[in-house]
Length: 267
Image (tube, rainbow, N blue to C red; front, side):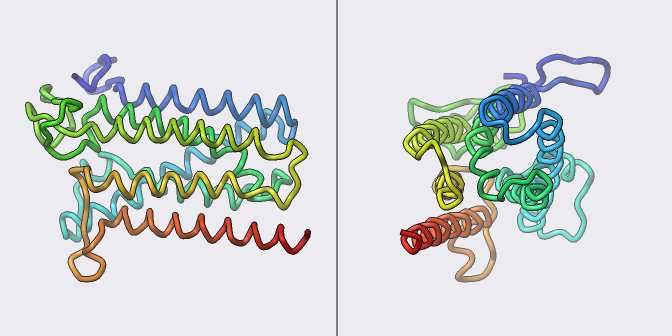
């Protein structure tokens, strides 16, 4: 597959990856608008526009910073070329950047941090799921070579895949489906939780989201071909993304423990 959808003029192109990200953002905005503005009326339309724009910037910056850190590890170079800098970003870095934005913005919206993250978590998964489909079209983030029936083979010279004409694990598709299943799980949990949600209940959705995305990336790295390892023990036992994923999962479990003990004390 050619990752370029069509050419506007000269070097200006519309990529399948950009289209998928755009669809994901639009769906996430619609979902957040329906639940937070129309149904619950906890923020205004203008506030949502401002929040989505800030999240986009925070995700982009966070994703770029962690992506550059991975490149430094992989190349062991003090300087990176412009092509490396512009070439991609890290999803985990985007999540960290987005959480930083929400930590900064929640007071201005008169909402608790955990209430805000709970409301946005399912829609973040929709964007991430579509983003992984974009990766599948572009050829980046693919898996190792495989002989499995379920595989993807990139043949176009514009593809970002490391290897052409070789069957590879479609880890992008694995991730996309896993994130969609996590979205369904969160929606089910939201329906189970009491409708008159109180402050003590905020945070469980966030914890499920963090544990789920951390778990997905941790195990997916065993199949991915673009992993970056540390050079010294014991850090070399896992990739950089796996260490970050493990930290995210531990944080999610700690959050659940804190919420549980707080709830037990109040009862």
